[in-house]
Length: 562
Image (cartoon, rainbow, N blue to C red; front, side, top):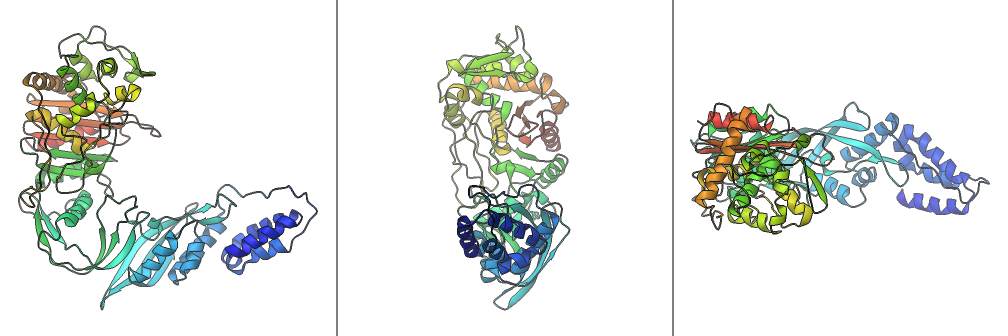
């Protein structure tokens, strides 16, 4: 069909312009029976047969706006019918894919995933979005199992000519696919595992719904090492260029069971259950709880189950970063808890004008007061005294962050504190700029303050596979550590963290944070704290101030672990 259209366009250029107008009318009229129009080439015929005396320089109009419901139904029906009947080329042609991705994935649906007898039933469209259900059979080496799932497609206009087409993404074929992934049925390659908590109880999705990504990663890492035997399964295989490339492959259907090997984790069944319950209360929330004296991770939970934000998120940490910045300023003699410290409404550095929340100021205040109230300008005002790499070195050398060398037992993002200059360097001091963290990183920061030593967090003991845990090259001096603890204790008792931490003292410390993000109405809310031999951190994306959003989640786990 594509060749016929290009021929028609070339011919229409030599004719009078109403030929093009006639072609556009053919497309609109054909919308009610879109499949017949598209497959018969009627549009090309209409263009060839039209003529007019319109001026040659007149350009055809391109349809814009929402796709009419009849056309949404028609193009969705065309795509789904072609897919169901194995007409891959026709199905791919009904999408806006400009590569071979659609054809490759749809071909692999039968050839690689071994899915046959497919029945696709469209649901009721909502605007341009059409939900549908898929039923089929997966067969491999004489073993068959039924497959059923729900998906959806969206019909959009092609930019060049306004033609309605299915907006192509791999998730149309299956919601667990990211662009670049594929479906494959065969021997799993990686044997299944039986992951257990620190007490030997099995970790299952039925008990702990947010552990799906963790269990997938544990299987990928330890399936073969744990001594299991592979089974036959349909799974999502992540592509090297996939948006989910860092995530583990995902099992969708098990045709024959393998023999699982056992992998013991450090998770506490009580605290993991508490973490699951806490994040369920707050949309877009994530939390980590660990034991500072050992580095053991006791709980990890995400309200959204598709991505492990707690371990792999890369988010600006806002004012929780002031823990690291304060340790740096104290070491360099630029701040001390009870010494006077400026906290004006505004502070300018590198051409940027920074301000405090609600433009507050503290007149004649101390650094402790600025830390407890989370005064941004108290830190920005000291940027001129620092080198561009000062904060980067502090994060790496004292807190073990940003070197991409953590080995906790599953995939993680280990924080990033890049060397920056001018305004971006100043912004890093208050957890903006290029700084990126996740709850695991910030729980580790609180742990380092609690014990005075960086101990890399871990989910699986290094004794299982001989992993080498990351280390920091130095520790804070006793004086710096004492002053930093004083700042966090005061914040927990009398500052922005006081409400959340009420009743948990006196051996505790905390820091709140909020991070502005472009395109969000509300900032991300952060909270990190320690109490006794427990430390935790959490984030609520688009939650607002950390003290009232992430704070109660972390505080509840600190209390549950006591």
